[in-house]
Length: 472
Image 1 (tube, rainbow, N blue to C red):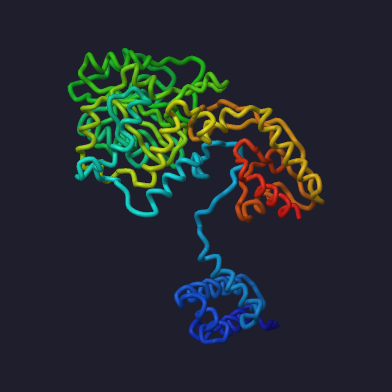
Image 2: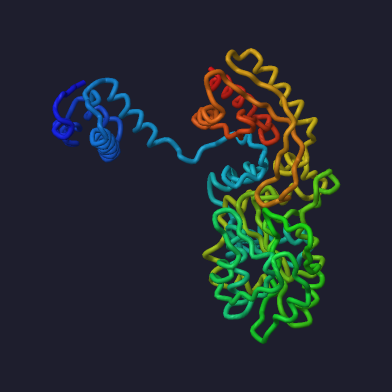
């Protein structure tokens, strides 16, 4: 270390002049050792980043330089190089209790979906090849009949996400025309996805009807013109309007659309394939119900309540699906082979005699009883009793479906609240995030809280190890 007692301005200039040039640093014994282990470009980037930080420290009042030629500093450089080569997209343990967690990858896949991905990724596949006649086929054929059978629709098309599905439908079928939509359904969901922006991107004109809390079928009828093309209904996703409200039934909108020779399109967003009411969970609109009530086209996601990979699914009338397939935009938005394989495998888990509530992780987590979660939490708590400096307790709390599904509906659960001596809840959360794998929980009443509803059986050992490490 080099200390100085000169004036602050001259001191900082003296320190800055002592910093080595990158080329000289590279030519040092440590620099050459790093270049032998990593690429020269990687080492240069790390060295420049360190020099920039040191210059900033000096300009902000630092009075000495770090020991740049030491083994300790060499270890710091190497640690940064190692970190630069680690995967930034990593497996995390979701202990938040939010099941379809948008920021944590939404729906975890069933084992069958993972196996399907592996099968088609290890070599070639008949993605767009008809094995029966030896000619070019369609990737859509792998899921079209399954979706039609599960929803009661005539046909189906799959693209890469639900926003893409909405854009494709509106651009292909309503471009330069008017789309009539209730003011109460001009939604915005995560990532600043706004329905008015999607409509504008489609090349259509948006016509707002009704008010935020009340829209009637007469409001829709009064807004129709010669330019009207689509009546659009949108699932409210992650909010609810309660109290003095009104909205037309889907059957009313479908009837109005038929009488006026328009299309009735519903964007369900989450898109449940089965009614969970029988499992003691508040119901979300199902795709089959929308089709049965007369929607010409229904759009929904594959990676939310359906429990599969990211996908945008469109089901409905065969001639309309055929028009969408012919639209050039459908190629730009098409689903990739790995997601397609996972989606097909997930859809098959809805077919009898399978029980999707048991086979599909999202549905299993939503419908798991509080008592069952509590038993798993108690087993983990028993393992943690031996950890010194840790205070752990069982408590009642609530989980959420997440992903815009079942908004405002709380799912009773049991959680473990953790406190560690000498650490705040925020510090514990940071330590858990820094682990491998990272554990993401939530902070409640200044305690780090773990909800096992969203922790699989295979993750329990990793979670227990993470708690021991963090508490230690």
